Length: 263
Image (cartoon, rainbow, N blue to C red; front, side):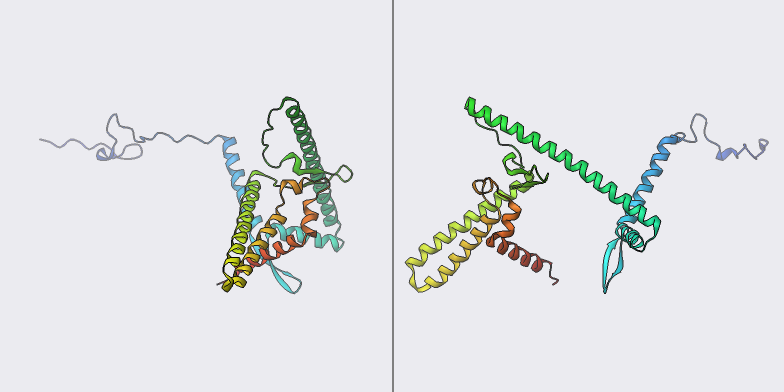
């Protein structure tokens, strides 16, 4: 039988053995969809923002007087700008003044919003208290910060908190109160033991004194509602002036240094 004549092979005419079978697509997944122009721009912008964020946060070492400090690229840029402004570079001076003006404007707007929110919250709480007194219904427990723990100075516009600022901090206050109560209970137990056992009385009394001191420091640094809701009470000033609070802060600082000590 004579061989079949070979078909010509070339552009658009692959060899027969390499041709796709009839009815079978050469691209089973189909043609890839083209990314819309806006989506492509958004993806490019997102990558650019990511690079900017990474570079701004990258840490470098700079000379700070006689010491070497580690700061971010963003901090280094702002520092360089202020140094140039201090040297009298006109463009740097205008940029620093503009940055400062924008910062103060932003802080003022944030403070104004905070003041309005605080005053509105305290007004609503006062209405709830009055309604509770009239109807005899119990007051609901508001989430932290409790309205009675928020103080607003109408003369200075300053807001300060005499208690927990958020639910997480509120849990910490409650936990510390439980710890303080446990220390006080342990001190009481040790004093009773010391009376019954004169041989180790001195040791037990020392341990009792230590537990009592720990409980007292915690109670002072995280004052109870009765203390912190007195008229004119200021938690910041209280912690600065109260000796037990100063001792508590010193002890906490020593503990932080101990934990961060290498080895």
